[in-house]
Amino acid sequence: MLKLYIAKLYPSETPHDAAMRALDMALSDTYGKRLSDFQLKKTQSGKPFFAGCDNIKFNISHSGDYSVAALSDSDVGVDIERIRPVNPRIADRFLRGIATGTSYDKIIEAWCKKESYGKFTGAGLLGADFSLPHHIQVFDFVPGYKIAVCSVKKQTAEIILF
Image (cartoon, rainbow, N blue to C red):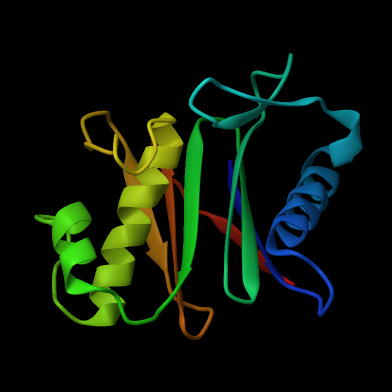
């Protein structure tokens, strides 16, 4: 099971609050529970998880006017990025060998893939070496944005945009 809940920010809402709203909706729709029913913790590396709940995995991300929450029954990482100009030195430093082109679109897509994998493993962007078995899906149905979700197996993601 893999679900992506994508929320457009309300005018007075922070991106993090929108991501938590998306996660709350995902939990409610999937399990009939609210975010407040769970105890949120973080690993030493900062990856969030629900204490005492090994069968519900999640990850959040935000960029620009959108936030996303990924909900799964196995480890998951997600990243959303607004397509924008990227300093070529940054792209070269972090995305060498990953980016499939030099357009901003391709650079942001590569960034999303790397970030989603790093969040999937809990190692972060700098620790994203793609050494563990994984499957990454990239979506571009939100105009001007790329979304990548990384999971342990190939599966169809259910996508809810609200």
